[in-house]
Image 1 (cartoon, rainbow, N blue to C red):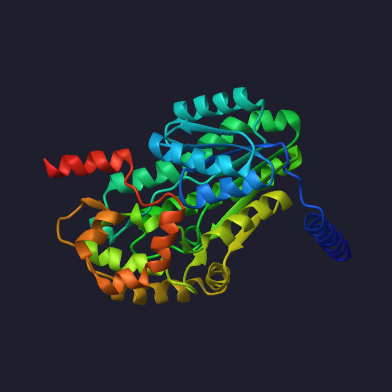
Image 2 (image 1 turned 180 degrees about the horizontal axis):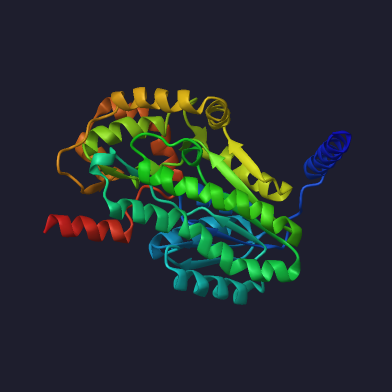
Length: 353
């Protein structure tokens, strides 16, 4: 009993000393190379800006070439070299080629930020197996593929920093976000286990757990079921202060966590409190979310089609929702979120035929 007590005290002391060192002397990222997936818009673009400000050469990937070019122009203002790569992170071969290309360009990859994501909003009755597969492909395999591809070179150098942007939806499964939450739960499990395994190699892996953020991402979220009603419920929550977090502040905290080598970082007081409450009272949390679900739009019988947020907004045409989403709309304009992607334009054209 005495030995166990001494071990716990020693372990606690070492962890406390390590945390103090992280806060007093965070890593200097000057001259390092950072790769950010989903870096062409929203949070990924903001994290890329912060890394460029910190002195990194930055590589970003996304599926849309036009978005990447706009992001390149944006990032060029912050100094350092910028590389853009068209890549679908759910495709393992494309990811391998991206890692090779960035490594050849800059010599090595020191920082990897797995940020790419997709949001599908709607009741489970209107979700399909393909929706769950897409969520897992992008937000689980899209984290695993880049990580496993870059780990060998990080291990060889005995240094590397990985940040996995998950979600409070990966700690608490939220109604009408079931495919999203399922994939984020998987990503949290991978990220936290990874941190424990790679610490011996001089590599840090940080699990970033944000709540709702004002990035303008609701313009590209995919709404299912009663499209306009789902948009009308989700978009204000992703835009209003107190409920959602300023995205630029979130990006600053993410880069701070990378520099400190933190294992887990919850962004925003709402996410932190919700995570703690769920940890203490998991059953109560689920029951409360069941009550919340009763207030959300009901399913649309037989409908499985998805509508991007910018189209649902146009069809809803609500002054009240427009007023409630003012901050989110301004964020979208600043963070490269307002224009439809090439894939969205193609899908819209197909529906019009």
